[in-house]
Length: 246
Image 1 (tube, rainbow, N blue to C red):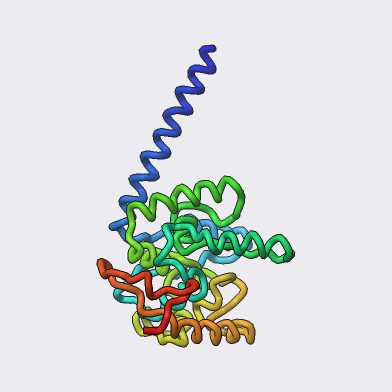
Image 2 (image 1 turned 60 degrees about the vertical axis):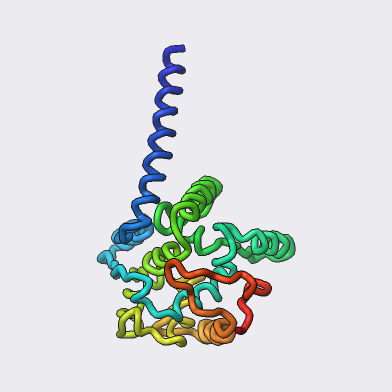
């Protein structure tokens, strides 16, 4: 009985510590730049395990210093309803469930908010435990962060090539420019690689990546500029997940 009581007391404090530290971390990252993520550390360890020197290119840039085309491009590619949902896109989830019933190649429905939660707080391998923590951190982020902040952290932390994380790093390494000077074509090309940035390259794009780039450039015409912090957003401009022309 003493052992059980000790274990339950220990478990209680572990739970309290987890919830308190995770909430504080999410609140802190509402204001602080994210300079390092678990994924960056994991990739460096993998490089060392493979006998390579660890490579990490990453520079934090405020969203206002990133090309306005990039948020539009990543929404067109990853999450067209980003500004409408509260972390989880139920329509996309239902479509993915129906698709996966009849196709061997499984389709996901992770939103930009979920991907940001995974990139900043968790590890890449997907399982039910990771998915549970991902949902928890997604709720916290949507509660404490604005959509502007979520997009800012996403564009600074997402993997965009081997050892390349964020808009400024990919701009320097693949386009020899700064994040704010990326063109519309550049941004569509970067977004086209996001499903597998270790396989697809925006520096040396394959015909498949060029094909996706063309599709995204067409879809980006129906998505207006990403709103600045504090700007209002009219959901009536949305139709079927893609914005109407104004």
